[in-house]
Amino acid sequence: MNADYVENIIRNIDEKSYTYKCILVDGTWGIGKSYMVRKALEDKKDKAFYVSLFGLESAQQIYHDILYQLLLHTENGGKLVEWCKDITKIFGNFNEKIKNINTILESHFSERDLLKTIIQKFEGHCIIVVDDLERHKKGVNFEEALGIIENLKQFEQVKIILIAHSGEIRSEDKDIYDKFKEKVIDRIFEVTEHSNSIKWDRTGEQEFIANFLSQHNVKNLRTLQKARCFLMMWNGAAWRLRTRNLSMKYGRYVLR
Image 1 (cartoon, rainbow, N blue to C red):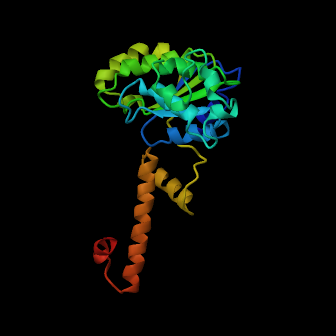
Image 2: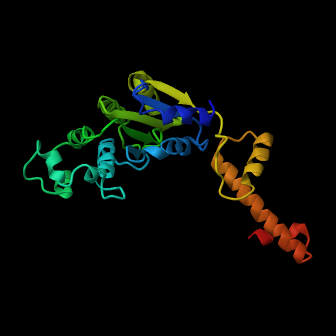
Image 3: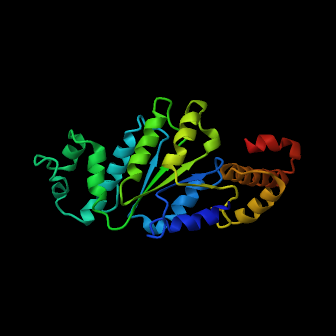
């Protein structure tokens, strides 16, 4: 599938008519999956939360990272502040002694329960994006991570977008993935073509990329950017050689 097609599908993920609770955006590394998902959710920043399994110390940290974004990591000092000036009201059912965010996070109540209580305050759907499914540390229990995703899927207000290159899932995780994917994932969208609307940083890159793609079978956008940077360096080196009347065989020294 073209990335633009999948992007249009994701734009409507919070609509009532959208029946999938959890989807997987699958594709090779560097094809633009994460870029495309973020672009599709640009107008849903107040309800979209991003977690990457890359670098997490445990599967339970998924809950923690989402809670952190809900409570703290926003321009307004926390999305909950928009709904409630006194944050302790939200946790009144848990413990009367909870007075601030620090004690909330340090309390003995499970982060899952806290998260569920917070999400119930949402009007409409909350979108959770879990990226780098295949890049977790070896110490992270992959089956537990899928179990947490399945648990989040049960929250009425939650829609989940997973991002991964399933072909790179570790061999020891492959059986677990194959066993549980039908239970956890409602639909898989495989991205096989780059977006036609990628905004490149430098003037002229769009033309360069189009020519490069027509000549080389490259999927990784980062590889394309590196090729573009090298071409720019080489053009600069060639110009310096010409101005100095040097032979092109000395170009490798100028590039240094």
